[in-house]
Length: 88
Image (cartoon, rainbow, N blue to C red):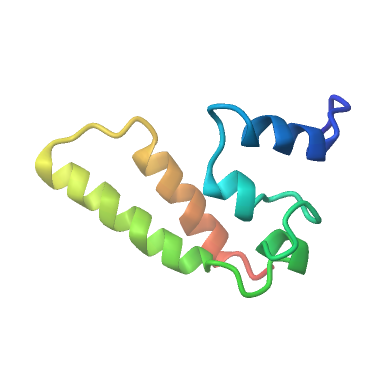
């Protein structure tokens, strides 16, 4: 969007390409593109960051226990931990 791309055009490109997914089609993070998405409602009543932190933490813990290498596991988990502690 900063480069001037219309977010609706980009969403349409994603929908008709290999980037098509439920996230792009139903939960797009750009306000106004998907009327029912949390982004279109001020992010109220969306999937809570605390729940995502829990799920991400379980995935990182499991990967560590079985010796699987996650390139962004701990870094990603840190983002959810910091975000879940942010009062805003």
